[in-house]
Length: 146
Length: 142
Image 1 (tube, chains in turn orange, blue):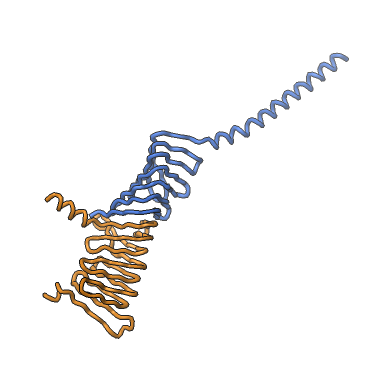
Image 2: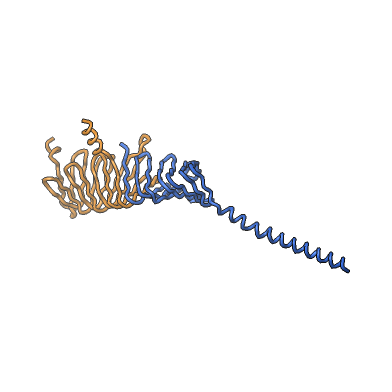
């Protein structure tokens, strides 16, 4: 029982890892990481070449509000993998937006486009193609059954 | 005649001695000042408070070496602490006038967000930026 509790806690750990460098700018309240960046929070795990994370002070703690990921972006959320050239996550609305050579991959499908908006709270994905004329909206099974 | 020559010899001798003394005085005075200012001061198990534009920073180390009026070197296990962070490392150089500290040794930083580990750092206190080098791991508080 204790083992499972420990495993659960270890998996829920939030972190930032960088292969080259990390800059903490306390005046502009941001962290900039370079080189094989890995970011994990309680929602998803993300990989990219570069990351800029903005934070605010909240009840004597500091929390990330906006995460920007640059180049070779891969975000794993539950059973899905999002890929793109650039991504931005906003904590307030729990939305991940990816731009440029975007793909969304799950065990049953692979969709590609130019822009992906993943609404985590509402379990909704909007995928836009490059020509901006066609739009694909995918409702996942959990939400579709409701 | 003999007395006249004796007096003259004595006067010349006194003037020469006085001249030698003046020479010794001026030659000795200059090097003494230089030696004093270049002297390195070393203190063991040191801790102190540094006041700067960015606030109060507490510093400490196993051994402090004062390089000159602006530069100190914290040898061995060392730390820097202020209201925003605690930096624990080894062999940290500090330029007090420029408000810069740095080290190429592994470092651990604790701040309000979590615990960060890196292979080195450069802290530009004057503009609130800390550059961490090498592999960096920042574990965020829950």
